Amino acid sequence: MKKEPVLVVLAAGMGSRYGGLKQMDPVDDQGHAILDYSVFDARRAGFKKVVFIIKHAIEKDFKEVIGSRIEPFMEVEYVFQELDVLPEGYEVPEGRVKPFGTGHAVLCCKDVVDGPFAVINADDYYGPKAFAVLYDYLISHEDDDLYRYVMVGFHIEKTITENGHVARGVCTVDEDHFLTEIVERTRIEKVGQGAAYTLDDGATWNPLPDRTPVSMNCWGFSRSFMDALEEKFPAFLDKGLKENPEKCEYFLPSVVEALLKEGKATVEVRESEQKWYGVTYQEDKEVVVNALAGMRSDSQEVGPDKLYPKDLWA
Image (tube, rainbow, N blue to C red; front, side, top):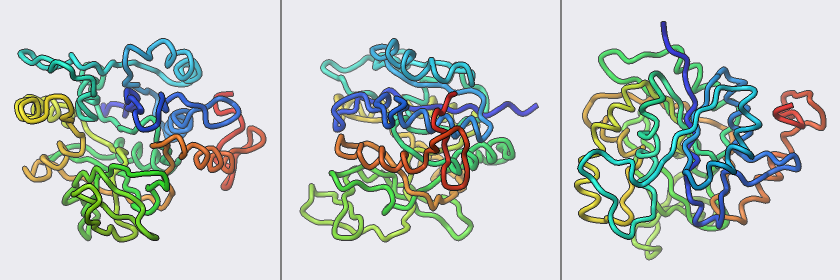
């Protein structure tokens, strides 16, 4: 019998550019965070279990603020991404405080995720259709001679902020809507009316055309991806800890890219027409608050224009 898909939420980030723990920051007058809206959408799509990846330092507050609201409606599990969660024989470099990245975060779930799973960021708003796509794909697809994954892609112009630079996985997609390449661009900004990235600290800019699909860490995987993360992590550490011990990161999209190049996996890209909302910077918060207010009903009734009831967890 096929296992029910699990939602995995990346919520251990430090929020250095935002200046605080944005995964718990309220975005409405009911005290809901962006994360509440995402988990609400996931539950509505069919997900019944959520795994939150957090740090021990925020455990108490996270469970009180987020977990207590969601636990009556979904099975909730907590996993901790800490620096010392490393394979045998490896140690945390002296002076390192930065987490080891999204790939490492997901790998921390290997003992509690034993079937298909979706991965999202805690501080990103994806919209209801993204979760419907993930759930429907995960219950209807299985690995065969290849690993079969899915990604909900967003158009670059709908994911940038007016308030600084962002990192995005820039995707190349073939005519059959399969991912052929994903390249992590760590400095993308709004330039003129469009988006562009720089590789030389702003000396030159490379434009990204409108409707270029980018990854916002909205993925659907079979259990095989967890095994791939575990298999490739030591090689990453061998290289990363030698070249950049304090800041190297094990990016989830980099592992996907490696599997594509090895011919082991396919990733179907379902492009979303919705605008993404997020809070990379403190100045982004007002935009998110206003957008969600426009989607929320004044009552518990919802409809095509009012996607959310006044109280999500009533």
